[in-house]
Length: 512
Image 1: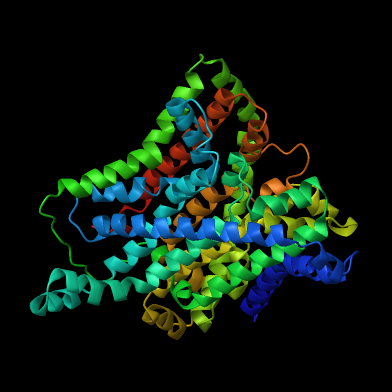
Image 2 (image 1 turned 180 degrees about the horizontal axis):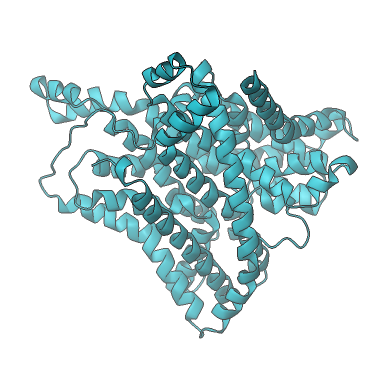
């Protein structure tokens, strides 16, 4: 009985704090200060042209990430490549840092290379940067599908046909769901991205919504425009809900079926391609930021450090609290989903909503006298973190729970062990690596979150990504590069530190 009350309480809290703001905002569009008809009249031809351009941009980015992600995933998961474990880790770095970091780095690179930023400050620049940012996601999804192909199926194919036909008739159909899921997720993320287009001065649908809401205070139009993106993103996720409900690419410590590996006639090709991608997506941006930061001396670097130091404590504290709550919510929802075979649609919907739009929803809902204590403080930022990243946490923990033999829980029930004891003594110890991984990912994503927090951060709030983004608009390029270099370095140190801690703390869980 107590367990049911706890589950109901958690779900009611999720609905009130996370879902209700979105419902309230959409409802206000129909029954707000201005009528729905008046809101519709504000839409013009340019609005739909901008939406079409944004969709085309997202489609292009998703297509490129599928192409390069499939090649990189095949090299990492199906070809015997030297240092493959190293590449599997470091190639994911762009996924765990704020996208604007790569945007600043490549703007510096084109300035140093060409003497101007005209080429990069365009749709080309947005596509280039977002391709590097989201290709690691395609690598994860497609690589997971490739590694789970039963080697016996491939070997049987080779007995009767050639390599090319095995690729097109066996492997490609088996990874087709992963390709579709990868495309859909990257499309949604690219369509929802705000920081990179805004930094390059490229007008897309998310920047238009931000402008209407924050600059022109045309809230009704901003909400109406937001509805278009919500419908597109949620519809696409629901179209792929079967594969996402399994989300095998978010599994921690799942060995799966032993996969068949191939040998290239010239193994240097795979290493060269992987190294080139690593240089372009990680090494080059870091080097360029370093050069630009110290090009005129170290004055701007130390000034940037002075500006960012006050933000470290609050940024880490908020991300830590947010990650703890996210893991707790993820565990409760995942445990319920596994036991009753339910899909967490509530968190999936919020996950699909673009960050800026979710920020607008939180503002509209919590900017009330009764809820001002949330709106005017750090609580609204933590709610934003929990809303945006709980789905990822839930899937990681859910996949770990699914790997636990049911016989363990049944034996505990036969022995009359209480539910709380089963959770503390059986479930949590067995899924500890997944809980830790969920915490790490939630923490890193939270500390770099910009799209939602830039919409709702309270006045005087000192958060690292907000500080960088608000200053970079009018700051000298070397100061912007210095601040971005510091954030990049902090992100790399956190990723490295968490990785070393996990290796030491969970050594017995690591696959041989």
